[in-house]
Length: 406
Image (cartoon, rainbow, N blue to C red):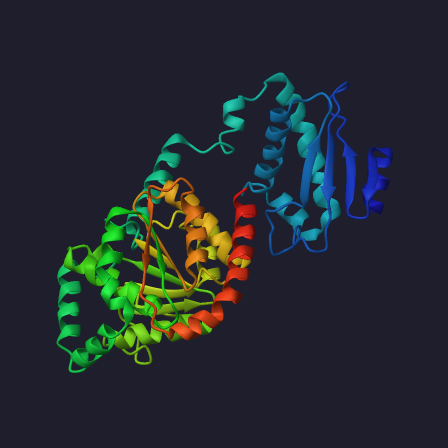
């Protein structure tokens, strides 16, 4: 700074500790100011970068912006000219000499610029991408989009239909399949499996209501998957089941995997789970994925799959447990249903009236939602004892949900 002041006198103004402004007096009546920034974090100028001047910008009240952009480019091109080793030696020597060289370049280029104004197209050609470059970028994005796995029900996520059927037949031929099937048939959900399938075939939103222990959480995903495989749509099926808690997601996923003759401890196959900080799924074989509500919300918010195009069915379990995340997810799914015309939504709950209130979230006017009810497995006396407590909860839940909808 002392050197610049001694040479240029009053043409130098100290703007701040790291910035100086120098008047370029090449042409009378034309104001042009060279602003140079010196920062300790910047490596320019230095011997490591002998072709890079310090950071600078140009200001003027009379010159058009594309004039200043042209002059800025002239300075950069001069320092990078291989036939100008003198400028490179100035950069290696330090900032003082480099700034003085920048000023000399501007004082030479400014009169020529005013005499022969630069072509605005040539000045701005690096600011706007070429049409062919934009077209190429669009084509690359389209190719990447096609390579994404599991985007939509009509797209093969991994296994082919033949591989799905072969895996399904191998499951039914497993030694423990018969005894496991007999245990599943004893659940109240078994008698209602066809009702669920019929409801999903006719409606995009289905509310499943059943008492604790009826099998609504563990059986519904398997019923849907088995039906889709039987209809030749197994390869395009991708079922997500949300749980309010991480422990529930892991526990239910483990049980469903066992019922389908799989062992999550040895590795995920068609059944897996995804929770915060842990994922146990098979990218090629995954058909039923249990996850927490937050995982789906993050997927919706990330922008990569905001319409859940890679999901064929989503089951929101335990909707009777009121939570901010759960209510927000249902409201988001209502919007997803408008954009994604193939996805189907099912919600499961223990309390009948809470489930009915939730169906209003998706379609208050009815017409696209249906309800399935499992026969209770618990003792009537136990239900009678719980009735009074549940009635008060029904009223509170309905009041809060109506406020959300309004």
